Image (cartoon, rainbow, N blue to C red; front, top):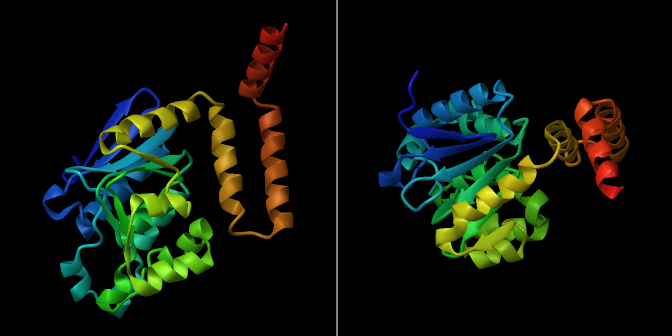
Length: 251
């Protein structure tokens, strides 16, 4: 089935997904969420892809969820966790996902960026979780992932005030990994992806699994997972080849 609200572009092992609802600043509605679900399901099966960049069309990342849809959504629909399920899928995708953020990154857009592994932002980008101003909370992972990234105290300020913060502040508190000029966002995201793609593909995948587990398990369980992942990698052909290349170069 063709995609109508997103575009997928592959260049070697790098895949770029562009959200294409620029007239509403790429607001997340059910239709675009459904397409993103399908895209990430298809990419999971594509072992040639080693990194994904997620971006918005028209100078904005995602200005939030579609308020018209949210207004009509009732309790049972909310419990279906439509956006939350997508963001969990992004977070748990086998390969790293980089959010390339321009313009507004608010509400559900900020939660989507949080679900990505890294965030590159332009200097004019705006971040925030304004949901309490609408009588709701950031319930697609915002109250859980934001404290893990910027700390509980700052996350409480962001969520409870519903304030909008500039990119410099988002970088200062650790939400943004790289802060660049607006016209350099995609260049910086591609450069970051390129550095990842030069590393061992299986090692990158296993490292992401172990890192994700660090916020979900106790230390003992996490260390056991890390040890098992390392044992698998120690017998991989890629590890053998890379270590031999290192030794040959050293000689």
